Image (cartoon, rainbow, N blue to C red; front, side, top):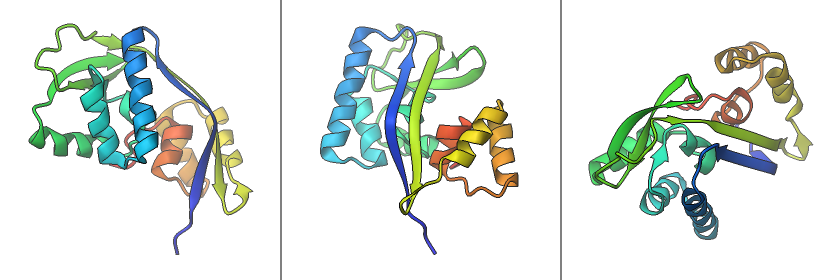
Length: 172
């Protein structure tokens, strides 16, 4: 039996601390186009690659709510000439920058991101966010949050992992 889970964002802000006004504007345009066209995951990634100077593997799940980013990038890499550069996120995570531009010499080597959100997880008419929020308050490390939630018997979807565990690769 399938259960429909809705995620209602009362507040959602994802920013890179040194993001230029140009990149900020590009992302605003991308998000607006994705909303207007009701784009699916692959189309959201296509829109971003076509309209933003570069995208990072860290930001794609958060900005575009993509749960299978590595697979989507791999599929488009075969179709398009996507350039790639290895970078560091939040002083500890390694990841990549992707772009349709041939040169990534102007792209920073490090990025610092901040996520702030208030999201409700709704099943039927019931708000089911509380147990996930409690896990996030009690456990700091993302993998430990996920482990704790699963051991507590919570059903954890890819978006639950993204929003409350900070785990971007749960879908993989």
